[in-house]
Image (cartoon, rainbow, N blue to C red; front, side):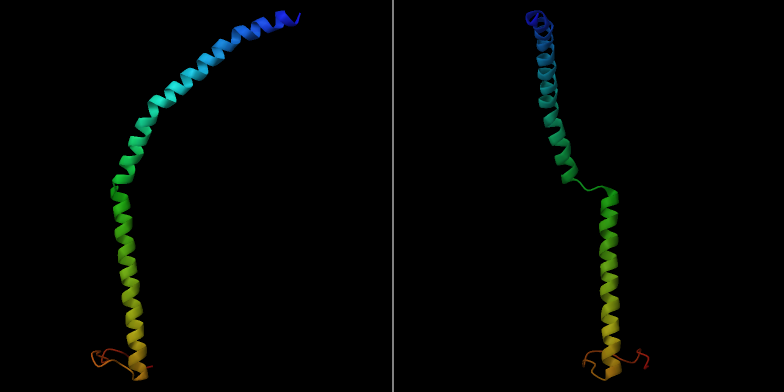
Length: 93
């Protein structure tokens, strides 16, 4: 009885093995394409990415200018301005 139940299992095994081999073959064939597309994505910059980077640079530059302006105003109000700084535009508190 055990032999009879093992025969259908033995007939299904080659189909399973064939499916596994086919799946592996597909993965091996598509791997170079996936690697190449990933390399191209990493090597190129999209317009949206370039725009985001430029916007980030502009925000940082604006923040730096504002910080420097606040520091200048604080120095002018305290009477500790550098010799090269003009304090005429700073409003006293």
